[in-house]
Length: 112
Image 1 (cartoon, rainbow, N blue to C red):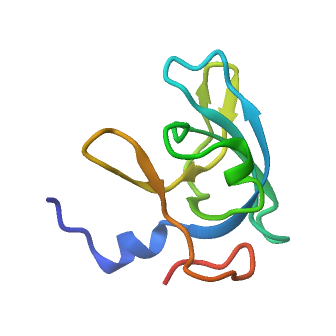
Image 2 (cartoon, helix red, strand yellow; image 1 turned 180 degrees about the horizontal axis):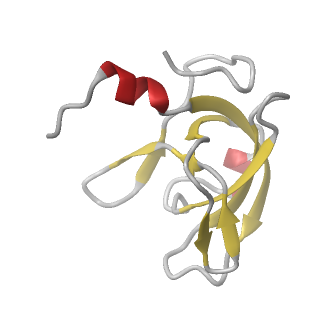
């Protein structure tokens, strides 16, 4: 494991957001959802794709708060321009458990 400095950690913008739209992503190589996430007034909404279909249905995701990285450069994933990275924990079977606040908080708060 590579150690990083405190300054490197502080440079990563891990923010809270609420999933406001979930769409099918049939073009994805691996099953995934297209997500629209509201990160609050300072950051606004961002789009992403997430390979989380093993554990989460559309109805499970709408309105759910997540933690996302909002300061990566946009990345083209097939027809989707991913503007943030939704974080989660990859289990041994490859399924992903989303990282999320343990109680509701304002959208856009930075992880400290």
